[in-house]
Image (cartoon, rainbow, N blue to C red; front, side, top):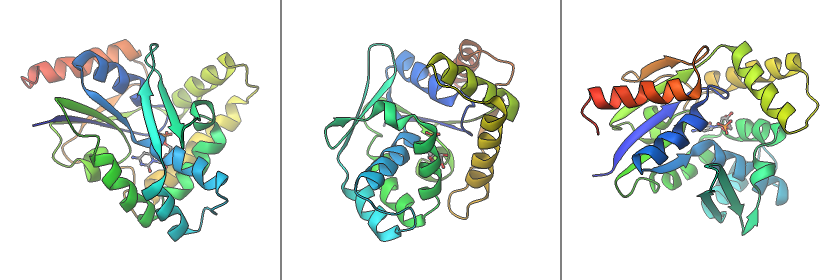
Length: 224
Ligand code: C5P
């Protein structure tokens, strides 16, 4: 049986970095479900499918040709129809559009099947918003990671500055707040902790400390 660990939480909670490190440490596969929504939004822009065209988006979600791989530095690279779209996938615009189309139940149903296919082999670390509540409700361990809006905006600010992008911290905090609001209040699969999830506030923790906390939890559960 494939062991499944779900790590859900809002953007900037650190779940992506922690999930990738955890998957590497355990020798498990990794699913970045947000990347699927992001690739769908890029595919929609390329094919000129509007963000309110539910049927068009559903069809793209079912048929788009995607491929993920972790590179040597541990970062996720993404191919869409054979084209490397890694950089475009991480822009704020792509994230915004992804969050909009993620509200359509047709899109979520089409991506649900694709996400479950990632569960194979020894284990999977699945990172997203509804991994523990909808996609893998029987997961062996569910973590819900969060952090204050200020801390999440500041993390994003530093990331973008390091990439040479000119951004305002205040505007980023507003974007983080608006994205939370949309993800938490939508009708289908809103971002909420699963009832049996362990909640982890990472505001004052480093990635290393979060990883150690999760590994301790796994040990306490006799998981490793
Ligand atoms: O995690 P990331 O920022 O890459 O996700 C982009 C958007 O995709 C989120 O704001 C959210 O609206 C959507 N998403 C989702 N369900 C998931 C993962 C991401 O609705 N499991």
